[in-house]
Structure formats: C-alpha cells, structure tokens
Amino acid sequence: MNDEKKIPVTYKLSGIQRLIDPVRQHTPRETATLVSVTAKAYVAPASEENLIKNDQPANQEVAEVGSATNGETVQRTKTKAKHEIATLEQFIAYAYGRKGHPLSVKPKVLQDISPNTFIPVEGMVALQRLTLADKQFCVPRQILLATRDIDGYPMVKEALRAFVQNVMLCQPIFKNAKVQAAIRNLPDTPTITAALRFVMTEAVEKDEQDDKDSERKDGEKFTKKIIDPDELRMNAANCLAVWFSISRHLSLEEVTEALNEAVWGPAARIAEHDSAKLRALTSIENAIGVGLACEQYKRRTVAHATEAVRASAEANGLRASLAEAQLQLERTNSELHESIAALETLRTKTALEQAAMHLANETQAAHLRDDLEQLRSRLLRRLVTDVDMLGVGLSAVQTSEPRIHVIRDRVERVIDTLQAEINKLREG
Image 1 (cartoon, rainbow, N blue to C red):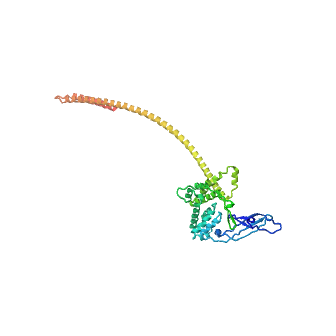
Image 2 (tube, rainbow, N blue to C red):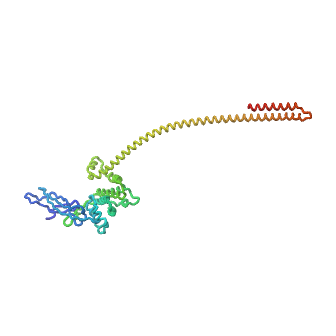
C-alpha cells in the first residue's frame, strides 16, 4: 500500500509522525473513508530508552483508529522496558525525557547516583543533543526546582546546578553579557529585575519549518517543532528567577516582586481594553501560580493596610501633640515677648535709677568733701589758736613772778573751745 492510502499519526511527546495502515472491520456496509486518528501513547526509540523513570510502571502504547461509519477503534499495545537510573547522566536524560513536566527524585535514586556524579565526554555530548532539542527551554527550571527538594546529597545538588548553569550560559537567549555575569554571580552585576528585563526583551528568531523541510527516517516523518519566542522568553525568565532564588537565597516575596516588575507587569500593559483584560483573566491555566502570587500580594496589601492604619493613628496622635506643642509654643512666645518687654523696661528704669544714684553720690561726695575741708580748716584753726593761748599761758607761768590767773584763764578758754568742737563733732 502506498503512502497516500496510509494514515499519518503524530505522537505528541516527540512530534514524530508515522504512517500506519488503516484498520478495517469487515462488515457489509463499511466504507473505506477514515475520519480521525488519535495517538494516545508513544513508543520510545532505542536512543531514548534512558529517559524512562525507574519508579514508573511499564506503560503501554495505544493507538485508536476510528471509521467514518461506526466509530469503532482498534488498540495496539507495546510494553516499554523499565530502566534503573544509576548515574547523574541517566537522571538528566530522564529529566529531558519528561519534556518540561514536574520532576521528582526519590531517595533511592539519589543514593544510587550520589557516587556517580561524573559525566564522561560521551555522556556530555549526548546530553548536549538533548539540551539542543529542548527548543522552548522547558527542562532546566524543573531540574533546579528538583534540587530544592534534595536533602543530604550536596554533591548531587551542586552537580545538577552546575549542569543547569552551563546550559543557561550556552542558551542564546542569555547571551547578554550582563545577564551572563548575573548568572555567574559576579560582582557589580544587575539586579534580578534588570536581568529578567534583559531576557524578556531579547530578540528571538522564530524557527519556522515547512513540511518539505521535515525529515524522513525509515518511512517515518519527523516534524520539527516551531519555536515560540514568547514561550521561550517566559521559560527562560522563569528559569532565571529560580536560579537567582537558589544562588542568591532570595525569598518568595523578592522573586515575586521581580517577576511582577519584569515579566507580568509589562505583559499586563498590553491589554488596554476591558474585553482583552477579561479574556486574559479567563485564559489563565496555571491557577496555582496565579493564586500564590495573588495571595502573596493580598497578604502584602493587608499588611500595608494594617501598617497604614497604625501609621494613621500615630499621625493623628502626632498631629494632636503638634497642635498642643504649637499652643504651648505660642504661649511661651507670648510670655517670652512679655518678659523681654519687662526686661527692657526694667533695664531702662535701672539705668535711670543708676544714673540718678550716681549723680546723687557724686553730689553727696562733693558735699562730704566740702564738709571735710571745712572741718579740717576749722579744727586746724582751733588747734592753732589753742596752742597759741596755751603758749601765752605757759609764758606767764615761766616769769619771775608767775601769773597764775593768766594761765588759768588761757587753760579754761582752751578747754571751752575744745569742748565746743567736741560737741559739734558729736552732733555731726
């Protein structure tokens, strides 16, 4: 049967197309027209056998083919082989086989790969092919998130983070020198918000492939996936945010704030009308992430509201205290002005009194000096006169015939005059 009569089946996990023969059910009224073919599972090729998780049960591949008349299906099953993960290389290959789905590591796997963290050159080449096949950069973030849940195996954590760091540094969307310095945690690097903005504004070429560019191998058609620039930027920004959270020990609040400023905020500004905003709000698929961000901002809003109420109460108290202080200041200023005026009046009065007292003292001193001069002159005259009188009386006594009555008269006169001066001095 040629290719035109075969039915193309596209496997969602790998993007590989296969041409299979339609399955007919032999009934009299069956028509040969086939309506739909749905691929339910994917059989891993030999090169991808290491991508199977060791703790999952064997899966089965089911292909359903429906007819246009009765919709009956035929199922075909194949069992996948179960492979143990014993090395770091196998674990990373398994992570890339998850195609960006959440990744978990069991303690037994960690115990097995702990002594086998070295990846040989051949293994690195194989892993490099897997990283290049991850066009939308979906896997590194899942590896980083898985390392956060690893306890007790520091070498495994460090090896996985070193691998992701190398993958990030080789990714073209991180080619900005400042972003590379931030990934390496070098000094004077941009902030997480600035680095995320660099990533979100990085130009990405859309790799479009036509059917004629598809590859064929063993009768199978491999369709190359188209790179979605917006999805690639978003995956890269999210991976970078997780990397900063781990390498710089950032809190969830800091990571959320950086993502909001660099990623979510600019994206939200594109929707200008209510209809576009409503369409975007009702198109949210990851309700958990949106709920966490909203809950975090809600808690911050409540905290800010509580802080605002407390600050408002403090502000009201400070306003009341300020008003009271202003009244007290006005009273104090008024009292100060009154005190200054009273002080000036007192100074003026004191200066006048001081001048008057100085003048009175000068006048009194002049009078006292005059009185002293008068007293001195009077006493001097009196002493001179009394000395003369006593001298005359003494002369009268010293003659050959002493004249007692003369000396007696002179002594009595001296005594009277001295007694008079004594009385004057006593009277003041």
